Image (cartoon, rainbow, N blue to C red):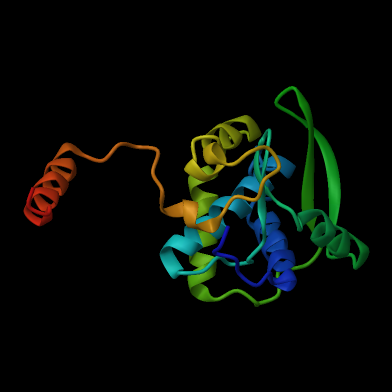
Amino acid sequence: MGDTFDFEPEKLQELVVYIAEQSQVDPGFGAVKLNKILNFADFYAYRKLGAPITGADYQKLPDGPAPRQLLSARARLLQDGSVMLENRPAFNHVQQRVVPKRSAKPVLSSEQLQVVDEVIKALWGKTAREVSDLSHEEPGWLLAQDYETIPYRTAWLSAEPPPQDVIERARRVAAEYAPPR
């Protein structure tokens, strides 16, 4: 489907550590929210910076997009002692939370960190259900089939119809450049 990027495993691992660090006191932070922050950050970076942060492949899952490479990245982080998993009650279920045991290594650019910080701030305090519902409004998730990879280029699509002035301008341009009948 095009628009593939080189996957950068170290960036995914350090992004997980960074997000866990920044989200330690967010009561809604758990596994589902981690997936959504990663997704929104990579797709927002693609729009804003021209490339995703990690290059991970995001698949359509029932709770929203998730990076295919996250479980192996998390396993490496657990194995080397960089993070631990903590289960705790939250919002009528058990929340599995990644807890950092160290600070993130400086592998992300300042522009990438700014994107991640904006996403974390936008989702702060929201529950897993709320961020999952937000991800279900994204055109990429809506267009993909279950378990299919969501192309990064869908970040340019909008679920909102264009404003009326844009439609009228497009009609004028189309009429001006239409071939004679």
